[in-house]
Length: 497
Image 1: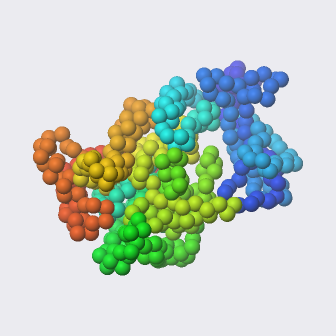
Image 2: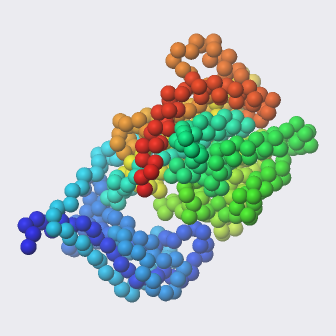
Image 3: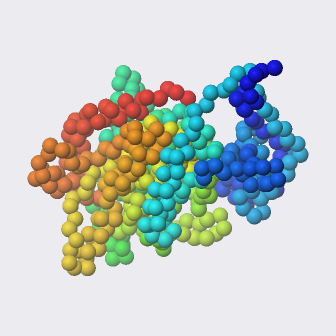
């Protein structure tokens, strides 16, 4: 008999349950919402979980099989509490076994850093109090299973700003980073490196190409060039002159046809869904409801299930997500889509408030991977700082200035670079890297910075883009040490599973 205590020698607890749900669901794409959990109770007479230091001692085991009337054996993860998220969902269990594995010697485990996560919760909650109504970042619950991921491989995350034709700049920067990950061989695809990719507007379009369509950066650049030539061209603008008086410069037919053509080429079906649970990485893009652009948070269009947040449009098509996230107001008409219940929404791009999606991306990482999952790198790539915008005294000048302020991606950068490095797991270690043409370098004279801002391309300006790409190439040379450090950070656990 071992002299060590039972708890010291406890290796794993596994639940095997022969179970099923109610046998039907209204929308398979919306995911399953019944599952099992293991709960440490406060005493033998309560159903409530033990709470210490504001942490609920709960571990999720596995999801119940969806839309079945049979009793399969689904898996062997942790869990013992039977849970249903919404009315109408049921769990029927025929048999169940709780298997406890006990070793001969104590198992060494590092204690989770509950205190640091508590600070993160408080910070997010304080931010929510300052945000407009219903525009909240979700605050991850303080549960023990949120810290189980601290021994898993650290995450690599990519965030892509919006910026019209200037999005080509972010792709050129990303290509340089990817080439440094395979200096002697074929460059890796971003979907092979990053666990999650997110984008807004044309950054969202790139996120879908890189994440859902699993394209190389060079393939994405080629497609992006073709997009811009076909969409932002003089003849297209002239052809749709009448649309300008209706509030947009370009029609929907052209951009939709170009997007569908690419998706059909890559996936063999222009109507393919955005959802792809077997993809190499997770990708999501942001859009907003036209009727609630300033009062509700952006709509997340995902290539995966988020078991913590039910998607508004779980069965959205890949072309619809691409079209919605790039529907910049005054440039393209909104996209009308319907939920599984037939409710119609008009979506526009999320540039007004989330042009730099890094805050929403980090929030999604916490929700999907858990608060305890380590992070190697969050790489945020901008599309250049647009030319300085002065608030005019006229109504037109005020509107233009306000729009520029709201879409300012550097404001999000300044806020979240501090939060992520301070509060993400392994705090006080550099994890957040921002690469953006036009970002001030310490020894640059002020007049050079002003000249640089004047040269940055407008969102739909094809005539200026060649000069901006030259500026991007110069930026890459100037930022060589920073880009090298970024590649080194990404490469730290690249071959770890």
